[in-house]
Length: 412
Length: 106
Image 1 (cartoon, chains in turn blue, green):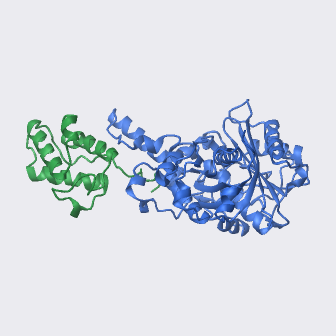
Image 2 (cartoon, rainbow over the protein chains, first blue to last red):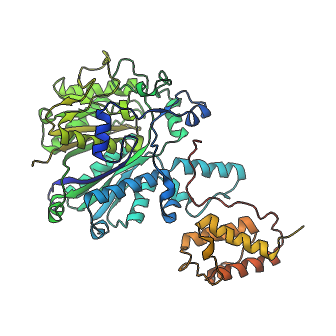
Image 3 (cartoon, chains in turn yellow, cyan):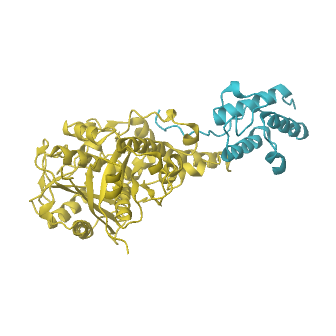
């Protein structure tokens, strides 16, 4: 019988539009800065209505070894760099990385979209497989991030690939937590990634879910929970958290950044894209129950809230049902945009910063909460200084996939 | 049909190593061992063979491909089958990139 073990975050690394570490990301967001840019070559050139995205602007994928690049599209290269940073941050030895009780849990919406496009262009132009190399499939397969990380880093424990759209990386962290909690692993690299591509933007643009009203004012475009919100902004990035069993962390003198104390995930069982407030609420309750905590114990809720009319409305009802107006709520997508498969883990990174600095970041561009939504204690205008002990973080993905995770500050 | 000369063929073979595997040209000496000296592995070997088909329009038998150890072995194999199957045409066909697809933007 496995006993329940305590699980800590002992390392982190990111490749994101807001920075490469949890501290940098939190600082960027605290300053009220925006990652949203006008990117006509990725939008107007394809006839899309939005002109906006949140790109990672300083990532040089040519700097990696050839053996990595041949099987890694940009998505996996970002994941690999985020993981390299996390390993360094956690001060993990090679012995620990390569131990059979060290696993990887990594997700993304899709495999490498740029490689997928190249592959199918070649097929349609040549009517054959002339464009295929031995590594073509490795770049486009859905578990490309997890598999490439395992090979590149020498990871020999469990490999989990939670490819669940926008819930991918939060699920990845939650699944890693559960695996360690139940004694099946000691260390896990958890996170997610997504690369920017017109198709990814086009998916939401086709559904009229992208922001189009502020194409000329990119920083003002993404407005989670706001009465004038008109859709999301698609972005890219990668993030890796090192999760570790308490004993393993103590044995090697690891720095404890936070404790993962609760997680749950479930499905709407209804519509593919229209969310269920009831299902969202249930997953939040279950995550808190897993943590042995009550809503009153939560310092703030970091919402998924993508600035779509329908999604934010449902989530507001779910949060209100649990927390009323007593608990601060924020969404980081006003500033970050929606990083798709990477959103959960990058936003968790910001949550680590908020836990450390005792301030709750505001929802950028939220000025007038939608009166149709359930009332919440929105953090608006500027970060709010407050003791931060427990964070509940949500991510919801296409297919009605819901995930909630609870982080707790480590007592000094 | 004007077939390429021997030197053109060998130059193209060496060019494939640079294009597909980013091999430094100075390492492309006849006695170079593919796996030990040029750092190729089994996946690279597959792509090398695929490039033979694409660029030289040749399909050597698997047994002969498996016997390859050095760059000189590659040269001799390609020359042997190029002479037997003289339908190469244009050697400037560019093989599919081994490196990731460049970003769509710009």
